[in-house]
Image (cartoon, rainbow, N blue to C red):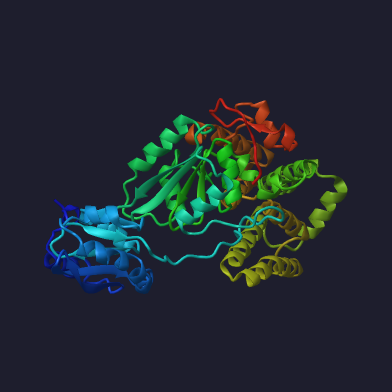
Length: 491
């Protein structure tokens, strides 16, 4: 039997020696307080272990210790169970095994041992370090709620319950990681979520065998259907309003302790192109914006490849006056057009990455002005043509219309692949790349839902909230794999 799996001894000296010498010898942030109590007329020594910075001993003295003192004085049987029943503090629980006690201790709770008594009392009156609620930086909304998730699973559940105060919203906890014991909450609506989807997620969560789980991105990789694809198989959000709306669609959310990002499943490609403000603006404007977003996605993927293919292999498809202008602009440039495109797109990605890593104010300046200044300097120095700078600039702007950051990164990789194919085979290369891309997307079925829905399979009702968005009075959303149909709420 593992040492941590054995029961807690009634000998305080034995427990103290084992904790100090074997478990806490290098954990200087774990403190302890020794006290003596009158237990049924006998004086007994106790130890209270706690994590410094999370436990207020003065507050515990007014609550836990004050309530405990008269109960111990009146005790006849030496059992913690009887004490817990009479305590008027719900945060106090009784534990018999070292495994659970040690896990809770390192999560910031206090642990109380009493000489001669087996087991321990765990006090969860702790003040964990927490970030204040603020608007998510990556999902800003002009209209609507402006609160966001934080790194505490219980606080995030409270934000969700504030929007869905109903027993219809189910919440089930899982503990993942043999070392970190990270709590993950599975949330879904019982009358809309597919039972097969919920069962699949639960099975995969139970099957995870890892030592550590600290970020939601790690959990995402552990739960993915296809390991060899660059496309995201989970959506994510830091907005409680978005999660509440998504649960109403029949999808599920995974709220992880220590992470402010909530995973959402299943997901389709079109859902990754939706933004929070799509549900806060008037529907005619949203239709226009979504169409522009689709156009921007196409430009971002195919414009550089199309420019290279047209200027290198299919010059007859370019009007004569424009072709002459492009040829004159390219004179003096030492690089062939394909290499020129790769260099300039690489520089754009370099500036974009630098803008993300620098402080926010400086990062925006570097990302925008840096690209403009370097592009202008490249044209004047004859390193790049004005036409190529225009193509890269339009491509860059089009990339920013994609709301999902992970999908935007995927587009960057595909854009380079399309550019390389166009450099060798022209329009034929682009066509081959597009066929391979569509074929790969059609093969993806995260959690049993087609990645290309509602195109494949074609579901007319789903078009009311994918390419277009109808009025609220006409919007009814049937989730994938569901028989129930519900009215949508905003995000």
